[in-house]
Length: 86
Image 1 (spheres, one colour):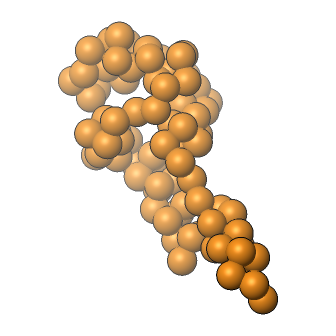
Image 2 (cartoon, rainbow, N blue to C red):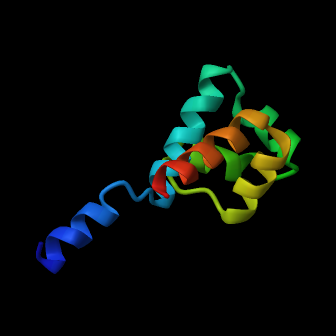
């Protein structure tokens, strides 16, 4: 196999920040957790939560870490996505 084909196979399932944020927002919406509750739970400004919840901007690593600490379902989803990449 050529190097280009191998690279495409290796990197095809790679998630970027936007994909991960959209997936987490989908999980939050499914559980009817809105921006004010997320902001309060994570101790972040509501505007920052609204940016990635509604405006499709990627969340910061700190937001992700806080979310993984607060919400078990987010931690499980991230761990599952990491185990699929191995």
